[in-house]
Image 1 (cartoon, one colour):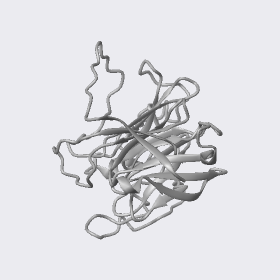
Image 2 (image 1 turned 45 degrees about the horizontal axis):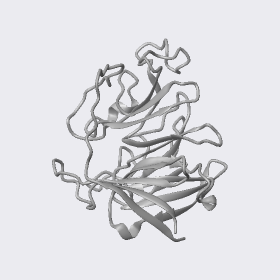
Image 3 (image 1 turned 90 degrees about the horizontal axis):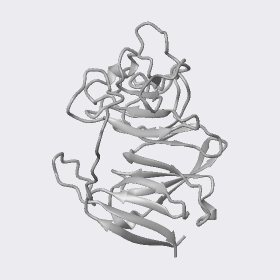
Image 4 (image 1 turned 60 degrees about the vertical axis):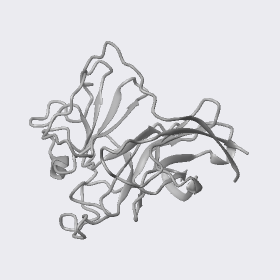
Length: 268
C-alpha cells in the first residue's frame, strides 16, 4: 500500500529532567559495553516491567537468579517489589525478577487484545526472538538459541529447545536487530488491525507482523527505500504510525554521533 512519510523533525533534541529519584538499579557484574535493555511498560495493574540485558560479556548470568542481568523485572511505581512476583521469598533469587534467560531485550509492549506481554530481543548471528512473556518463565539464553556465536561456533551445546525453557513465538535468521515494538490500535489503517510493528536496525526497515491467536502468520517490511536504521515505533492517538530513525547507516561504531528523524506515516 502507498504511505505518506512526513518528516516531523531532524536532529536530536535533548530534554531536561529535574528532581530525578532513583527507584531501581540493576544489580550484577556490569560492563561498559553493550546489551543494557532497557524498555519499560506499565501493566494494567499500574506496575512496571523493565527489560535488562546480559551486558554481552556476562551471558551466563542470564540464568542466574541472584542478579538482574538478562532478566525482565517487575516493580511498583515507587520501586518496591509487588508481593506476587514469582521469586519473592525464594532464597538466592532477586525478588524483582519476573522472567529470565534473556539476551538483549529491545522491545516490550502489551497486546491490547489479550493483555499479554510481548517482547523481542537480539540474537547473536541469527535468532532474533519475539517472545510472549509469562510469570517466572525461563527463556533459555544462552542454553538454547536460534543462532550461532560471532566466530561461527555453536552457542553452548547448540540447542534450540530444552525442557523447562520457552521457545520464541517467532524468530529471524538472518537477524534484523529489532528495536521498538508497538501493536497497531488505530483506525487510520484498518488493514493493519491485529498487527505489531518492529523497528529493524541492521534490517533497516519497519517490519509489520500480522498476529492471529498469538502466532505470527506473516511479515511485511516497510520503509525499505529509506535505507535507514529504525530505532523506535509508536502508534499515535490519531492512528498514524510514528517512527524514529537513528543514523541512516548500518555502522555500529560506538562514539559516532547519531542523527535522528521523527517520521509520521499516514495513508497516501
